[in-house]
Amino acid sequence: MADRRLQVFHTVARLLSFTKAAETLHMTQPAVTFQVRQLEEFFNTRLFDRTHNRINLTAAGERVFEYADRIIGLYNEMNIRVRDITGDVSGVLIIGASTTIAEYVLPALLGEFQGRHPDVRIRLSVSNSLGIVHMVESNTVDIGIVESPVANKNLAVEVCWQDQLVFICRPDHPMARADKIPVRELLDQPFLAREEGSGTREVISDYLAHNALQWHDLNLSMEFGSPESVKSSVEAGLGVSIVSKATVAKELRLGTLVALPLDPPIDRPFSFVYQRQKFRLRAVEEFMRFAHAHCERQGGVESAAKAQVS
Image 1 (cartoon, rainbow, N blue to C red):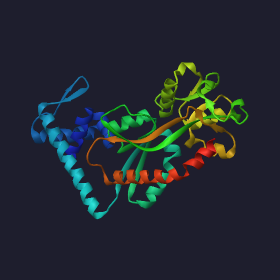
Image 2 (cartoon, one colour):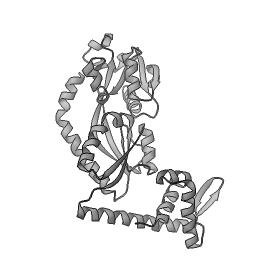
Image 3 (cartoon, rainbow, N blue to C red):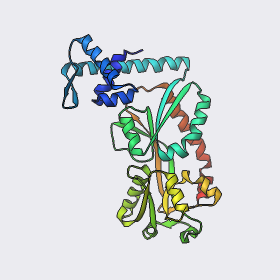
Image 4 (cartoon, one colour):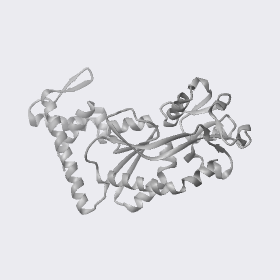
């Protein structure tokens, strides 16, 4: 219902990029340019200065952006308030999730949520935690779920549930018979790691630092872009690793891997990250409430999961 020209202009002005705006709005770049030019013709003035492949808002553009921000905010508020009255939960919900969460945590949660809210169309974008934060910053997704700390203080971060990282090795590995793994016993083992930008890698890096160690103290053997690659390589005897306990349930049942707690242990939050704005789509609000309730229910089986790991 909001003026499409204003929506497109607002996105370009916020990102200061026609290309990024086109990606965010799922439009072609010429279509974005056309909408902005229509608005410039309406006001009979330039809204952007374009120099050396960079754009900046003109004085008029700054003023239009201020009003567009308020208009779009009021539109979103109206949308949410009316849907609160009608109880309608529909529309498109775009979720960004880091690899571990998308592959091992979200499928069951999204399946249950979709069953309760069939009129919500869910789109899932998957990347490492750093990539998901960038998607939230650019408004490519409505909400992100990440497994590492978020440095951007302009984004809101809300912990949903706690995850535990565990040491994994083959059942015939000498360390498989231990009760727990002291951190310094990792140093002599060929270590298989996730790629830079991975939330798991960042958490392990912080863990090492808190124990007066660094990455170069590990015998880093290989780096991989997914938890599956790490697990397969450990199963093949190429080394040991540290992964989320959520990723190894199948391997523990099959007996192809052993998972042991670390000493000291590693716990990390899985967190929602989203733009700091007062009003969000009703579907986003409902999903966050549902996810929190889902995590509270899962808390009842947490002790059983920990027993399975150890």
